[in-house]
Length: 423
Image 1 (spheres, one colour):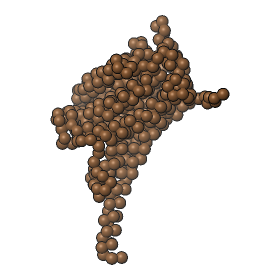
Image 2 (tube, rainbow, N blue to C red):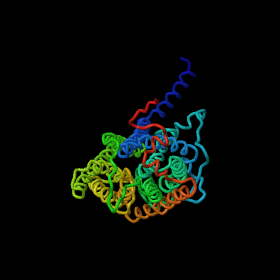
Image 3 (tube, helix red, strand yellow):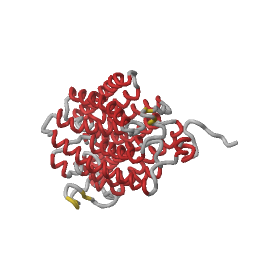
Image 4 (tube, helix red, strand yellow):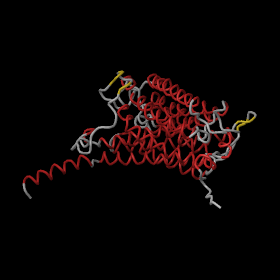
């Protein structure tokens, strides 16, 4: 082998080592785990929704990551991480449309993040988070929203609103400078999605026949097994959601984050069960499932900075809150099909504030509260305005006939559980 060939081989080897670091492999795996959460959301929503709307629900959950990733490519990533391209310092910046580094740019991506993981891995990992925020909205307003209105809302909310708000912390914005802490998105992802969901159910209104003469009328879901599968897929995905947010393959910290995440999920499910047993006088599987998700959302803000004991407490409180929140929403006739507001908004707020209570280090409860209020003061009014404009223009709700007979047949021409043969 010639000297020049040896040198070229050595350079190629160095590039391969940089590219295939343990960090990059773990981040790619975490990205795949977050991606599979979309299947979990689809399962939960289709399982809790009525069978006559199954295809409609699955359609929305299929189109959501498509919209989320495309808008994140076009503008979201550079809105969320604007770097020095600031229009309003710490509040709004934009590094330009599209994303950088062509494939032909030799080695540029390999040197990203100190050669820990590539630029492309980071983009895709963050893009999966963006798509998740829209999926939260989908579950709350299911069974009566127009697909067209939902798609328009998703394009604007995920393409513009989510990344701009996310830049306030993760993009080095003003909340980051204040010391606000949100490890993996109890507020940045879950509460932002939850505020959108709350605005949606207020504007759209409850499903027909949901509240009659002061009573809450149960609308049985299409498939309890599917809902259970969906929750376990989400729990699995959270290994990537929280574990990947370490942004490295640090063995100690990643393992620790997975432990606190799982422990909070366990106590969330357990106390969701206990609380529902006291209130409803039955062993409510739905509240156990939402309790698990509540614990996961609650721990997401501080999974790396709280003790294992604290993670148990955070999950337990989340499990209690998710049941009380669901009952409260029904009292106000706010119809949330899957309990998205209770899981993601209520428990997202709790988890963010819990960092100021249980966080090991210099964390301020008041700073955490200010962060929560900033996101509330931006996300909810914007989402409310978007839905209000859609209501007054294109309309946000299907006709009574379509809602009564089912969206599958009228909107999509097929049913989720029945094959119809033409005679």
